Image (cartoon, rainbow, N blue to C red; front, side, top):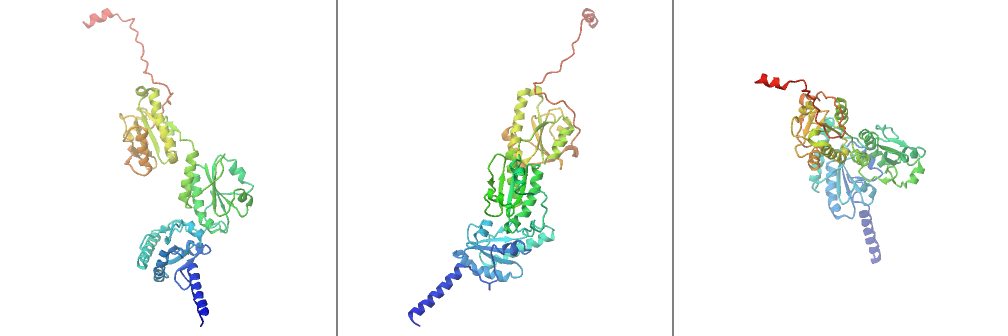
Length: 446
């Protein structure tokens, strides 16, 4: 063979080698399943199996060193745990969906395929196999105990009618402006395509979030959906280029893109932020009857009850300063949607006793969970800083609690609401001494 022929053979070999390197680290003969945007939804998200998925780039040295170990693990776990690989350099949309920032990144897809876990173990086949079997044991324990791990995304679609979508409002070109643009409410609108795998994955999360958001915001934040393949006028108006796209609409403002997470908890958290940003602070009510106490405490997770000093001890200005502190805290914690109440010392003495207040230490504050009939007392100062520390601890589930005395709210007295004025001492009856003979009285006493 001449030099030119040898050169052609050498170049052909190198070209072939480079071609294989650029196009992936795994082949059809491996037990590693090559995953792409086309098959990922069906193979992984709709699967009942546990999956270990490597996101790699062919040019990445760490990925190349991992490849033989990954293949060994796939062979050892064959028929037990699925082992896959995604060329995230080639399929950047799939890598972007899972926030891949470096290579290789390994994720574990268990019972809840929407919440893939990051693999943090070693890069040997032994370490990978151990992690897979550990995850598999957890999956089996969950199934035995009846915990499904949440929605198995991808199995439900708008076409199949899967999932309870009763609180997702379907919008069209004709109904959009009337419902959204002219509304005082906040709208989160998903633009989707029925054939889009990411949209199908999002659907059960969107539906579950819609129901929770409707309940927690009393319908003031709405979740909706637009089939952008049918309602092309809307898709064009808002520049929809990919699916799903979620936009937030608020009256008088330009729509903004939602760029948060795609789980129901992420969506709910954003919706509650929007609600609290637009909602007025909760009312601060005086306890003048049983109905005020029960309706407020029964309708909220917690009701914050303050017992303020008697009006004769503070005057109107002093009382208003306490009420201002409460109003500021109600504004600060309005996202929690707690109820806020107050009463004057001595006006509801039975209630004070049931909350361990009674008789001294005013002003005082208690946070009451009416469903569990438990309460926590403010131990610090009745000030913005003191109350803020108290409520912050409660908001993260900390702080000591005690049962409400008697296991239920006591009888509440009906009282006149405060008129906003300084208190007045009771007027004593005048004593008429005109008919008394003081001289005779003095003699008798003597």
